[in-house]
Image 1: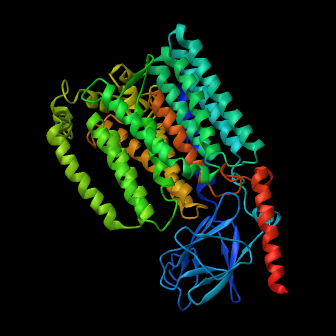
Image 2 (image 1 turned 90 degrees about the horizontal axis):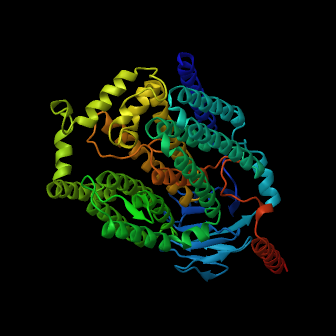
Image 3 (image 1 turned 180 degrees about the vertical axis):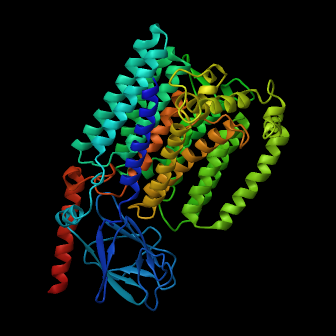
Length: 574
């Protein structure tokens, strides 16, 4: 047991260091989708949505007389065609002599585009040329072998299983072994499936499986009788991760479904509010056919989906106001339900999305001011929330009352030391909600502070990766969705860790992937699909389809557009 504790720490550090090196050390290699030529200059088009203007922040910068700071938007559609939009410019935008209105105009290669007094042409490239340029980019996972990292993760899980088999009741050893076996088989199946579709980047999934393995360990310690249920939920979560990833491959379809996603999210919260019973001051759980789940966890995915997809036109502020109304409905419903921890997570995500979409500090400041007033009102109306704030920083003054859970969490975390007592060797799991709301302390006690910090580092790594990727994202949708997803994971992690240690008010928020709870696990895996989709490294994302994977209708449309462009070009030459 002693040797396995040290081996687990070494493997955790190796897994995290390898993932960090692979995800954060690669230099930026832009994808090239087309080029814009004006005069003798040619500017590569490296995004699917491009701001055109004189501004230094413009994606296609044209510093000429008559060009405004942001003059137009060039947007690529999923079928490979391009649309041009006028950003209410004074000089106007035209294509082949026809003015472009608010609905935009399709642009074919070789078309004559005029912005103010400047003429330019869009030069598309063939799939063969694009593939050739893509082959020059560094493959994801080239520096650090993902297979070796996954092998280390497998050893980590086998050692965790060995510890549990030594401490668990004999009647539960079979279900615990089955849970870990299914997890190991699932991650290797995922690895080979990604390799079959030409994806070499596996760090995002490795981190998710690493955290999930710690969650399986928590379930084996706190509720071994639920291991079979937890195993089924892991399989379901992984399937939803893949399905959402496949859905995100069609950006037009993704954006078109945002209204349906918003309606479903509001309906879930409304059903929760109308039918759930109050438990510990909140109505967070909904029971259907004998199964209980938290609608707010599923709404997290819908909220990110709607918040990013609402940016269907980069320049229309009206969409931002609609999103603000949707956010107010979601946060207001959560406040009425009494789940203020989740409401805070949603609000942090709202700040991230609103800033990314508007770029306005004033908008964020206004939202924070409104939230402060709403929070003050909530504390006044809900007495149990006021008690939590009163307990914050004073848990040792009432160790058998308001501070009961946190004082036990602090004692257990301290008792685990750096190396822990071993899986199943702790006592904190006997405290109510320890395996969900105080899971950081549970890991500290059983696995030690070092592995608990590795758990935190895993979420931080995902966050740095998403932010770094957003700056170079191929589409604003994927960039915003990834940043929104990691903001939710970061907020949950911070509230769980700091709430358990009495550094923040105790809110009862779960730790991503690790806390026991099926709905939380489902939402976390689905949020990972947004992060995976934003990966711009070659072979890193599953949202970009190679030309060989295009639907026949899309391939025919591309061929038709290419023929029309050649005919138009030939007509001008004669």
